[in-house]
Length: 137
Image (cartoon, rainbow, N blue to C red):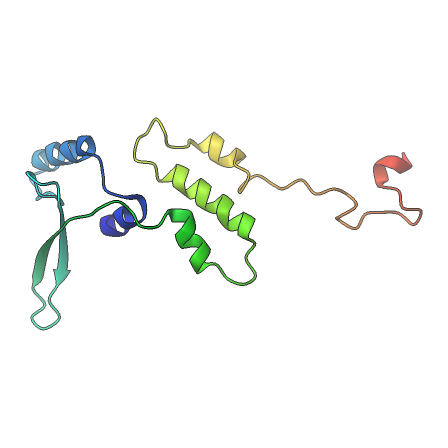
């Protein structure tokens, strides 16, 4: 999961990785990154033996953005604007820095989540004379 996250959003900052080392040391767990090079330690399972294999992988800047990846995988019926709005919301939710991450209230008010305002004309509520319910009153 960390590898996919880095593939979409780029490598983690060294500050975050230093905190990762400290927290994993206190938990007596092996870290997911190399301490001296900050390279990712990707753990796979050998298909023949079933034993875990650790590969050290250098993760560079992301080649595609999250929105670009979502646009490539959207269906024919998906609206481009909705996919772009979802990508923007997801990017804000996945921000590593808590100061930049969107909170619950902001997420609920985001234009992807918030109900879209539909005019009464587009909703099919136009009367016989062409007036809207507000105009009748």
